[in-house]
Image 1: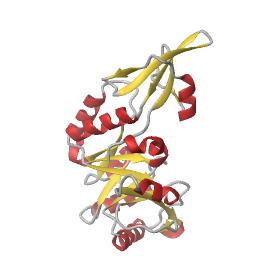
Image 2: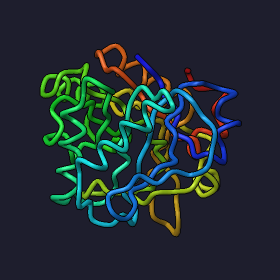
Image 3: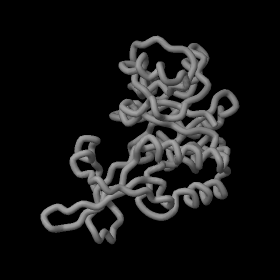
Image 4: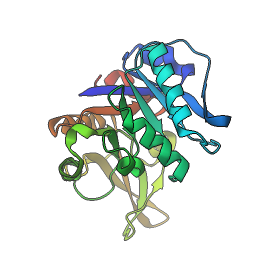
Length: 246
């Protein structure tokens, strides 16, 4: 399994002290189907392109060709599509064009684009608030093939009311989590995460969260099940990077 760290150019030097397997979050889609790049120095790793505030991709083939030239120029081994917007026809066409070139590079795509890129590696988010983590990964391995799956290791920090029929909690910052943590914390083997309860205004609430140990455990489980890669992100890993497995 390859373990990557997604990082912006501003934090590249700090991240490189922990691993050279970097996904460079430095690219976005520009006008006229161009590939825009921040000014930075790098060779090797992965090219990560965002669709945030991107215009319509009028020529998917041209954008695909631009990605290919950048990969060749900087010796990138693959392409990460950091697409957060809902899928649109133009983005789907671009993903399909990249997937047709799959022999030239390894392509990593969000789950929402998995059907558009059957040859690509699809991300699965590690942050589960219900069910069984290992079985969740195992079932997806049966559906797509574990060798075409990568674990997106999201640092879970959630606050839930009890009871919580919806299963949807409130995301917390690291500082907010620390303020709510109690001395009595526990580990859930099913969710592969830590948890505790606390009282707020007479109501009992439930905290579910990750630390370096649980994040490493999730990566090990994915590796045991045959996943080809796992990704950490620098903003979530910075304070625990020395404890993570690289």
